Amino acid sequence: MSDCNSCGNPRTASHPPPAASLLPGQRAAIYQELAHLYRAPSWERVQGALDHVLLRYPKFLLDNKDAHFHPVKELERHEKESYRLGLESFQAEYVRLFVNSREGVLAPPHASFYTEGSLFGRAAQEALTHYERFRIAPDTSENEPPDHISYELEFLSFLCAMEQEALDQGRQEEAEGLKKAQAEFLCNHLFPWANRFCDRIVENANLAYYKLVGAFTKGFLAHGSALLEGKPSTQAGGRSAHTVERTSARPDPSK
Image 1 (cartoon, rainbow, N blue to C red):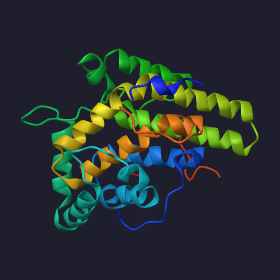
Image 2: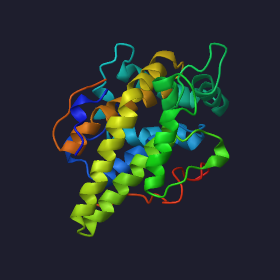
Image 3: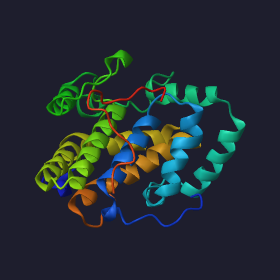
């Protein structure tokens, strides 16, 4: 397995399982939820998807040590904002952070921006190479480069779901190969830029919703190497509950 140690890397709820005890299917579900949260907001995502991961896995949020982020305060603020604000406020914030604003794109959601300073760079081609290895084709109708954060999280969800399926059917060697593929993608592709992306969200978001999304993502990915190695993590720079389609790295956003 790749050595991840060198990578750049509440509301009331029952205590979450230790990070290292999460099953591949559980990791698949978290990656899938996060992928949805980095798409244009809908009420289902604002009031459903985020709450779902926060309630089930608050540890990944509460462990965040970012000086710009105060989890309890932001959870309380999110509850008020989701009740008081209309959907257009969340849509405008999505555009301001990830598409364009008077100050520029505040939190570009593409790997190439952080690794090369431009879009459709080498990182985009590398991401596409990973997808093609598993016969996954990103949804080009959305006109996003293949290194968009949502595609990358969806890809990891796919690998985790396939690992769980292999384990359920006793295909241990195949499961180990899928686990190594996750480690390779995390260490060589996602970890080098994801922390900076999440920090930009937390620092620039006006709405608590996106501060929580950024902080949770950073907290979950900080456990990534330990989850794959099967040991407790430190903060650093059963069957899957859903099915990931092999033909697309991003499902229909309307679903």
